[in-house]
Length: 326
Ligand SMILES: NC(=O)c1ccc[n+]([C@@H]2O[C@H](COP(=O)([O-])OP(=O)(O)OC[C@H]3O[C@@H](n4cnc5c(N)ncnc54)[C@H](OP(=O)(O)O)[C@@H]3O)[C@@H](O)[C@H]2O)c1
Image (cartoon, rainbow, N blue to C red; front, side):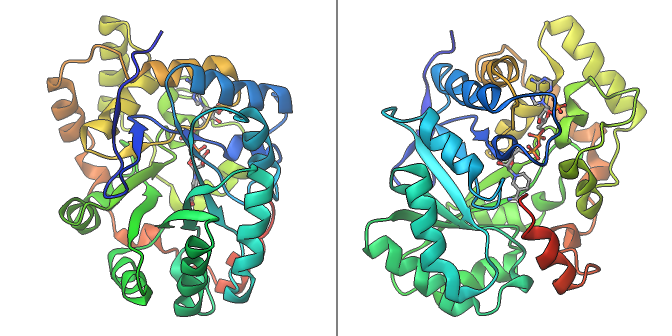
């Protein structure tokens, strides 16, 4: 059983577990057919029973299915729920919040603007509409996702009263680009950085080391942002440390992120994965290991931050893909 230990979530006053839980898998459609809706719900319950209290979902995950499964699974339980805006048109924001609020059956603790800022029609109007929902008591705190520094600052300037409390970006051992100026800024301003795909969509679990990743819509989308496969020395180091410490590779990958002061939100399809990922909070891992992983993965920290804004993809195409139940 995991020890229950919580930390402050930036300036919000919320107390969160060091590991969160990603609910894209509970959207069902994008992650293949090797699990059921029941597995997805049981994974959420297993995570909660193992000390995780921060759950991330989005209106776009299965067009609301993930929010519904999350809401049903956590009914009557104390937890912090984050969801995200699917639409790119600022005039739909209030309707989206209302729908998420109903799907989840509770107040939204953190409402995040999901996609790269370039696809939204009117950012000023969008943030002001979210602020209204805070006043109305539907949303507690406002965050962004996939916002580079320039837009994070802009978003803050659009706000009349509220503050942007978090930025959710791709971050893992093999995607460290956000570590440059964005992480420094977040640390300085007590803005939480939340790491999506902390296990590089399964690549950092160990099980796909020597084989191709399975094909699912979620993994095909990886081509937007990936192209970073594990180098041989890093692969070997993770395998050796996992064997000698008796700690699974996903736990090493999750704890590496925690060591940077970032919140990992690994996704899980079943209770076994959920338990294993929550046990990472307690695993005994000497600090020196993170320094070694740091130097072995330096090449993934120097990539261009444009990975956070896939400019090469035309906005219209991005909007079509994003609106398709991911
Ligand atoms: N803001 C955004 O734009 C954005 C983008 C992506 C994700 N997210 C959020 O971030 C969360 C996590 O990212 P992600 O789901 O893309 O990727 P991830 O957490 O890096 O990888 C999740 C996948 O890894 C495998 N896995 C997880 N734990 C495992 C374990 N202990 N042992 C073996 N395999 C394990 C499972 O897939 P298999 O069993 O199929 O291998 C699982 O579906 C999402 O659920 C979502 O909430 C946000």
